[in-house]
Length: 484
Image 1 (cartoon, rainbow, N blue to C red):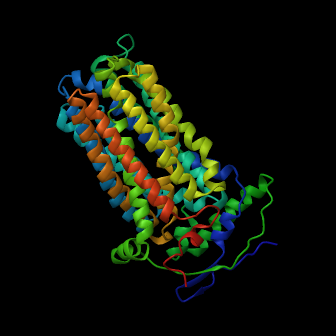
Image 2: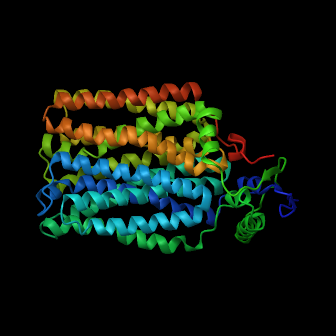
Image 3: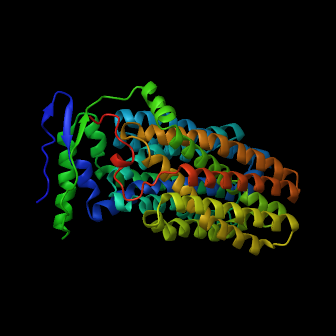
């Protein structure tokens, strides 16, 4: 017999509930697959946007009205990240106050409108503005999507699911690269129209996702905290009914019910006290992991096309062919290594993937500086590096999403994404744009060593202070602030 605690019974503002335990003990079913597909595709959109910005950089330089320089390309990357940072903070705050479901519609609408507008950019300033707004939409998506998926996913699947979803960034990268290959080809479209149609891919895909999300429910965990236990129970019972109809046997619920106080919102003073006083060690870990991976990825990937065109003389319309194997390595890393984060554990696997990425980047950077690699060998080296780095980067988002209390989860994701990306993601592309402008391999090697140092530092911090959150409920990893 299942435990069926009556969560509708209210004692003042106090509720007793077993809904989190009921969600965590569920087998994987069609509901979970559809949830992951409809929400996790956000990462695909980000991969599409980032890849398009790099793959069409050659076309942007020659586009009438834009005529962008290498510095302008790096600036556009920085502006996109700045938008993502501000979007994450603003929409993350709203996500914890208004709910997950409302926000992942608002942020997706913003993304669709802004990326469509990018296709109609008429000068450098308009291009930068629309890229900033696109970044805001994507940044807001991160907070609403990551918190929602984690709050629905059974505890024993959480690590692998989160890493795999983050890895779909690279399916978007492959889509962007493939689109650039076709649309920048002078025999197909090419010219000024080609790069504009590339950005239209994201807008069309975003509209499709809007339709897919209409059936998604609100997070029962969020509803419980905000005084809507009956609606939370209805959603959980509906999921359980679907699973039984699909032939699944549901295990009995174990453990003591939670006692939670309903609240309308969490004051910002309590948010920051929780993040930087009560959980300051976890905050340091999250900040370090996200900063290192943001510098590593944004500095290198935003300028990947420029390295190919400026140092290996690859034609701009052929850059996409070199992005595809890079995307393959990035997607396969989280997919194949993700299970180990639930089996071996977070602390070991996160530290290991960060450290391996640092070592491989140093070796590859030295070979590049010495001129030992041709363009094919360089592409293979990047593919191997990012096999491990992609799992490492995905685990950073997993860490900040699961190690802080439910009431501030979305804003916690936003705060650490903002700090980490602001430090690593804005400085990185601008720095590497200048290093490439020097046309000196030795200058670029210094940038790679900085990235490797940051990744190795993150590995050490995680090994010392990381949280072993594998196979534990979110409420066990971080006690809710409203728990009695």
